[in-house]
Image 1 (cartoon, rainbow, N blue to C red):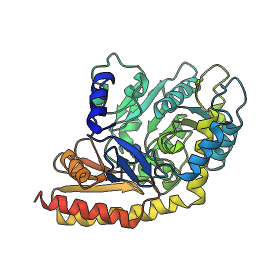
Image 2 (image 1 turned 90 degrees about the horizontal axis):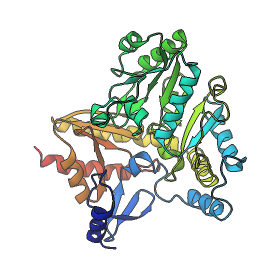
Image 3 (image 1 turned 180 degrees about the horizontal axis):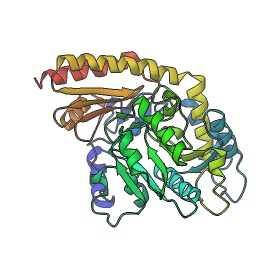
Image 4 (image 1 turned 30 degrees about the vertical axis):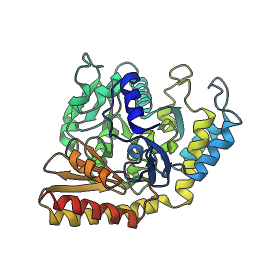
Length: 393
């Protein structure tokens, strides 16, 4: 189908909850995607950090092909071999002991909220969350999200959430009450503008939780799975959470979410307390198992750290040239460049140059390339940005 034909059908039949770029992407391979007109683009959005291995990685494709002819869905009424294999692999490579599988990041956070309330035994239910955070679009995860623009129009919101400034340990401490059961945050805020937790802040939050018998919930939906140069972002800080949520890159393009918890915490869930019809189905788990094995075996975490550091340094060189670049920040391949003006025009100009990037909170250009990205591909983006910025002087 031609681009205009797809756009017209979308306008007529799809509920308009998305503001789309005028592209119909029909094919992907590695770091490249192609539109319906046959034009090739370098993808530095990666499905908003979903395509961590790039598009259609052969090992993931093979895993899906082999599983799809065996068994796609069987229900959690029965034991599922790919699910237990995946849970074991996650436990072997994280702080956690047990996993609950679902279909999305929002569902993983919902599971974390429900588990923390069980931990509170009906007496403690309040969760302290951060300004600038993003935890999902369901009513509870929306309430936990510290950005008013997402919550507007949905009152009354779910009770039991307090929002405090990010990277402010004293404000978190002041917010604790007799009803508080957990503190939830992203080690690197994605939708909030690539805001990185300070080292002493996250260590301080861990101590605060230990002192007050609170659960520490880390939302690593966007910043996990090798994106920041560690398999999980908490590894940068020398601490461990009690609960962690994952999605996005977890399935490498196949929908899956996961809540991981330590044994002591996980034990507060009993059969019937929570469930997901499609969660942990054989197809999703087979794809995800292949994703994690590939990240580990092909040293993509190391690549994310090395190429990410290179990328950040190159962006900082641009900052020295252009006074309207306010800041460059991030970890690994999760990088933001804050501008003095709205960035949507830069995104459009990059698209015209066959490069896909993203802008969040209006003024922060966000770069989330696949973990397989090369320095040469980074150089192409830097050169393109340099040419675009020159026209802004």
